Length: 250
Image (cartoon, rainbow, N blue to C red; front, side, top):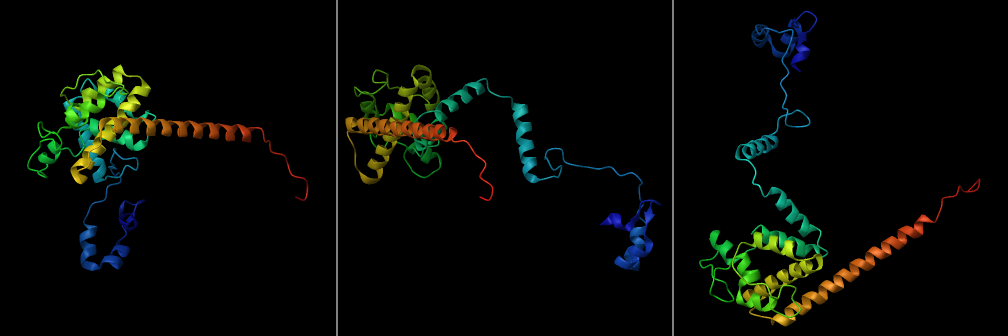
């Protein structure tokens, strides 16, 4: 280390050591460098270790851009919508699907066209409208047939085109927990039916779709309830067993 070559008590270079390590010519250059008795310590205040990293610079830049731009007024509402997704009593794969839909991450024809994967954005089922997330899961005529079934929790809702994010917001606002869970599960099944038609040319009828979803959801929630009850029983059973000191020699 450089500090090993400095005599801090005298504030000068350790000449013999510098020569021994670097040689005469390099040592002469080093010894011309003035030594300050007080040094300014420079550290990076954006990491816990106070050591600079490129990653911390990126996060700092993003924070500065966010501060300069400001935040939209719907931030708190967004957090509420995300929380409504994660607390649904449905399989995790359904929650992830709804999250992708609200963030427009599904590989619809519209999104694939933007990425130059396909040449046409028309719905592969009805061939009438651009296949957006909302069209595929909500307003396509074939999707509307499912939502119009008698056991559907939203059978009287109008099927209109709008972004999926505000649509999900309306569902959260107007449906109770159980109804919202059914809608989320049905939406994923609609998307799976769409994929089955695109890749296998198989198309299931609306009643079969919605009946299968509701039966599977009921079975899942019943299994979850039984699991919670079993865990509670196991915990309460362990609570009555008290530790006793073993006899001497055991």
